[in-house]
Amino acid sequence: MNNAQLLLDNLPLLIPLVILEFGLMIAAVVHVLKHPQYRFGNKVLWLVIVIFFQIIGPVFYFMFGRGETA
Image (cartoon, rainbow, N blue to C red; front, side, top):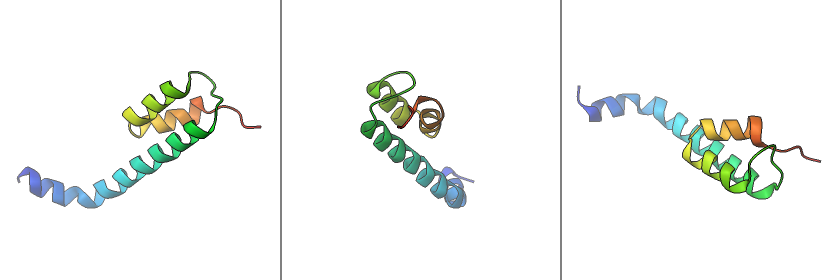
């Protein structure tokens, strides 16, 4: 089985993962840009983590980096 066929066979699994990845990243980037308070770090640090560490970065931001909202 060649790589192209393997990709086509796994496409139904990959499409939802890619959509989830981009959705989480966009939600986290919007939240980082709109909210000035973080538990630790700063805006630039969280943008780098969210954008470059796909799926894990946004999850870490929402779990650990997001500041308290008043």
